[in-house]
Length: 389
Image 1 (spheres, helix red, strand yellow):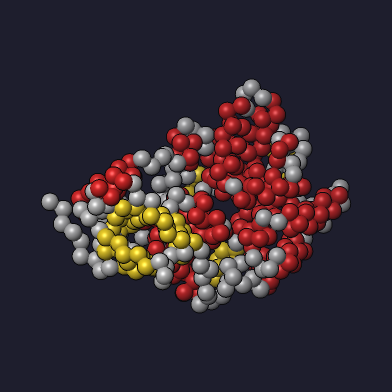
Image 2 (image 1 turned 180 degrees about the horizontal axis):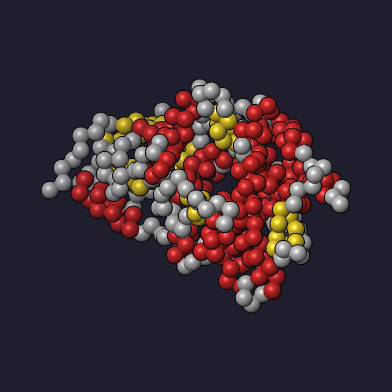
């Protein structure tokens, strides 16, 4: 017999709540609610009935691609979190709704699906607290299943988790889509490797979606497919990691039958290490230390000494897209290369990017989605390229 846990009642504040119970649920003294609530509210609930323990968020050696993808959404696209996350499944023995106060009180509540997302949300709020900044609140969506019998709640959790689909990275990795890309990448970064599963863990793993986002952003116009030659398409490289992966898979599948796609696929292999090197360079503290990036509005993350640890991708991707003007095919080497003109100065680009950030209310997410930011920085690389011998 499965005994009931002894957790205290939890009061959740919500913005929207709907009772979506079926007649069959009501006949079994059960019910279901669909709810939208602030992300901080989800931290009130324990995980006593969760099917798998959450890997501690602060142990970076054990954070998988799933954790990193959730973290990236929280830091880069919080306003899209509820759309890009499958939501939480909360189980509880009973519920008491107060529509006037917009609260729901749950007894014996547990997150039965979404513990990894909860852990990354907790990590974000704790990180903000450590840095002395006010975190940005954002909304999450949850399904609350009320079932008096704990054994049935666990049975429901098992059934719902079994139905979870295999993620795209794992499918692509299993089918070998990253094998050649990984070999090419390791020629420049031998101590690192491209992760081939969402559940792969290790500090030396590179998220293939991020690498592909960078490579698509840096692909030169004369090589890119027609639907990826516009500023809007380069913005999509920042906004939509899933499409970057799916487009790469399509490219891989057609490289033997389509000459243009064969050239594009070769670009990915030739530029894997070089593109990642550019990204690492542009997110380094040396580039940004003098430009007063703010931690309180998530332009950058700093350590206790004030040194920049991370720069928001919304600031970096317009730069990566502009650098596409320096990527070309070297006939002598018979490969795609990155060749930066001597007249081009990183300091000028960084300063221009900082001004674009200010013009977009200081919010990197706005800048990363703004065609005007991409166009402004691209003008700089076009001019530099025109002066090349």
